[in-house]
Image (tube, rainbow, N blue to C red; front, side, top):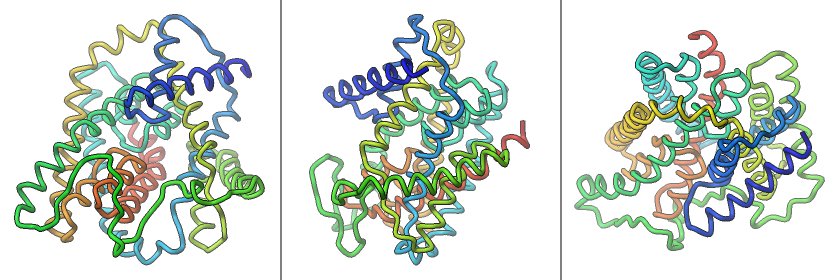
Length: 361
């Protein structure tokens, strides 16, 4: 198992660096997942990781999400709670409907179809599927296609709708990677402040200690995916309460993402090819409806809550916290609003979906 863990990390990190050099924006999870999937689909076998290692991975991911809830964001979070709740309910209902249809028209079991449909993050949902013994390759593949679809379509969507809805506005949106300063009136947000802060090892250990207390306690109590949920709630509550906690260093988050993505990739055994081929067309149709639902809700937010259209589209897109927040920074949108709505939705989905899906299935 130790050899497999080291092998997964080395190969996953190599894939991550290669995809970065090729300017293919798959992220640490997607890059390592594809790399290991290619290797294991050719017959290479890795040992199954022990349950406590999976729980530790869940704890680190939960701590990462929990660190996003800050005491200073409470006033903004209060004002965005209702929009975030509406966005979450909309996305959950749409994805449940799509998941049920997907189970009806394919050979997927209902649990796998539902988890494949829920937009909660590739690594998070992959670990959920792993915990419930679902078809991890199917779940991760459909989640991955959804994320790629959003990354490919969102620039065109934002440009198109800004042209038609804001033709009279003096504000121009550009979609590129040039560095621009966000609007100082909206504040700035960083996804990982360790780039500017010197985080000591003691700070990291303290954060992981609190996360582990919450995660392993929740797991002991039998809460579904307790490692992730317990650590997320524990750290989030402490942050909101004003406890001076740092954030995890970037290298630890990336290492966790690489190992998580790589381990999910090891589930792509040679026999999975024949099973996944018939799913391609339904999955593409599913991804289209998920993208479309985010666009519809973004337009509604633009009209009802008077948000600028780009912020509304990014906040309601099922592309994930990191990608949508970074995109908001790149195009001078409102990164705080996007980040908080995305974080609220992911937290709500991760909190309720295990229980909701257990009830449905």
